[in-house]
Image 1 (cartoon, each protein chain N blue to C red):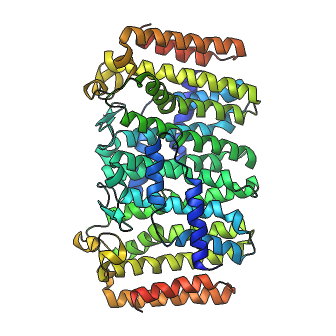
Image 2 (image 1 turned 180 degrees about the horizontal axis):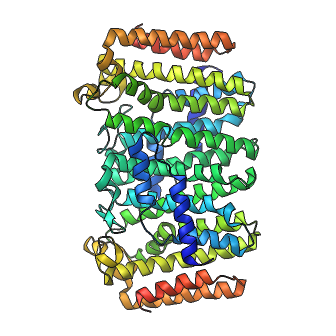
Image 3 (image 1 turned 180 degrees about the vertical axis):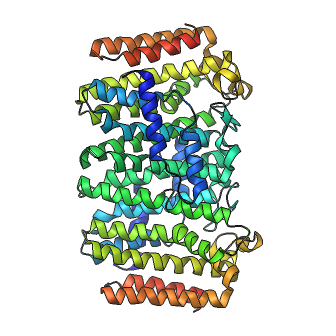
Length: 290
Length: 290
């Protein structure tokens, strides 16, 4: 399948999985951010991993969509006034600007259980033990040792110390790589891949996630609002720790090239047959200009 | 087992299940609200239901504690400035007053996945299919069709209309009964109870939860801060829909007696052998003065 076919399928399913029921406002708020146009990288990478290891796309679709719901959840809460206080997301007003803060908090909360519920509800072909395995991955990467650990350290990272490089890697691995790890690991588990393959995709996802975050930091510095659909330059204004603030643009670009090379090396060594992963890397390189 | 033994056991396990790891602030914030002194009604009712139907207490402990974590999660987010804006909870400063709003939001988020993760991590004797069943109950009652539905309608209920009685019942069933239903249903499922028994405890929990909320509304009106450990009279000041505001104290008390009588009827008809449930009802009646 090609990138656009994947995206279309994911969008159809996201729309199908979130029905608007009473009390409508909460479902509308959840659906608003989940269905904002996006590249759907995490679900696509979950589906592609599943197919790469011989699995069926139908079996991974609920999990792929659940990961996009979780991603949307992190965006809703990160944008809140008490967090990053962002008024725009993907070119549209952020969730709390449309539905109010109280509903935005609750919509995020609701997505945190709606996502794994989607997995158990729609994954008809997965055995209970595979379901539990997939859910454990979700709990780990969505929780206090996963993406939330990254966000907490991010909040606390303002005012850098000599520990900055260490903190920055920790923060990026959790805040960004964790959802890519979740996507690829669950794709592999659903396909029935063995432990060596799961270890290999974990390494790929971790490296890719770091690269993705560095690219995001660079784009935050060199792009316009129209290109990114969100408020830019805020990290800099608030003295936040980013790859660009710590290393400067040129060294950040260098680090990015190096990480993408590592991704390619893993793919070659492990014989990952995926054009999609190569396409994704190329498109990011093009945007950043390396 | 007696009430105090149950409470002691639950407190020990809650303390054990939440370890303080890096990044410490998030785990400290989670643990702060989860371990505030409380009656532990929901976990106790889960354990008692499991035992009443011949199950093992060890098998239900992780789920019972997960429900207390979920309950703490709702308290943390409900107390936020953008929600009920409460500075005190169980006699102590509320979570965001101690850890700041951003960490309080994230601690609530973390608990929403930490709770079901506790179930899968520590329920060593449950089969994968029982685990999935228990998790599905958790997702349903914790989510947008469960306790969150109640909270959303509560927020939107300010400024009553002629639909008030209907809305009030909906709100109470979800905001309060749902966690009691979750507790008793999972206790029954873990014990291997049949569908008729699960239906019976569901009915009991729904009725008990409504009564519990009416008692809370009455106590909010007649108690002191020292007795309740939280700010009182706020619902009234903000024109919120409560049983007392809609029916007056006397009719609310009358409704409460009636619901507790229904609870006793269910217990008798279904031959529930539990002194604990009777004790819980008696202690609430005593506090409210009926």
